Amino acid sequence: MGFYSDVILPRLCDLAMRNKQFVPFRERVIGAAEGRVLEIGVGSGINLPFYRPPVREILALEPAPRLLTMAQRGSRGANTPVSFVEASAEAIPLDRHSVDTVVTTWTLCTIPQASAALAEMRRVLRPGGRLLFVEHGQAPDEGVRRWQDRLTPAWRYIAGGCHLNRPIRALIEDAGFRIGRIETGYIPGPRPMTFMYEGSALPN
Image 1: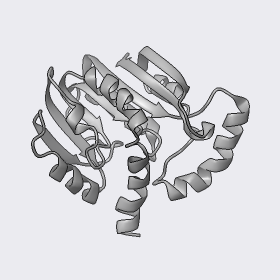
Image 2 (image 1 turned 90 degrees about the vertical axis):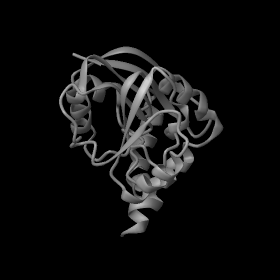
Image 3 (image 1 turned 30 degrees about the vertical axis):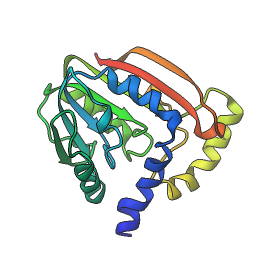
C-alpha cells in the first residue's frame, strides 16, 4: 500500500490528536520528563516543542520513514537535542537500562504488539525511571465498551491500526510496571473514542 499505509493512515490519528484540547495533556505528560528521554512513535514530531529542561536528550523512535522525515524537518530549532531512531517499538535498538524516561502519547493504540512494546520499554528504562503516558482506550461503561468492540475492526482500517478498546492500565501493569499515578475519564467527543488514561508508571 506504500505511501497510503506508511503515511496517510498513521497521520489520521496524528492529525486527530492535534486538536487544542490535547495540548494540556501534552504539557503535563511531557513536562514531567527528565534526563535521556525515549519517545515512542514520534510521528510527525508534534510533541517535540513541548520538551524542556531537565530533559537533556530526546530519542525519537518512529517506524514509518516518511513520518520520520517530517519529524526531522520539524525538529529544526528544537530546544533539546533530538536523535531519530527508525525502528519498531517491539524491538527498540537501545541498551538495557539506557534511558531515564519513556513517553507515549496516543501511541499504544496503534502498535501491533502493544505488550511486546511495553516489555521493551521496561527493558530500556533504568531502575527508577518512569513511563509517562496519555492514551485513549477501553472505557469502564459496558455500553461504550460494546461500541468500542464493534467499531474497532473498521476503525483500525481507516485510522492506521488504532484500537479503540485496548485496556491501557492492564497492558501497562501486565508488562511489569507499577502504576505511580493515573487519571482517567472522558473528554468531549464520541465516547467510544474519548476515554483517556493519563499517568506514570515505574518498572517493577
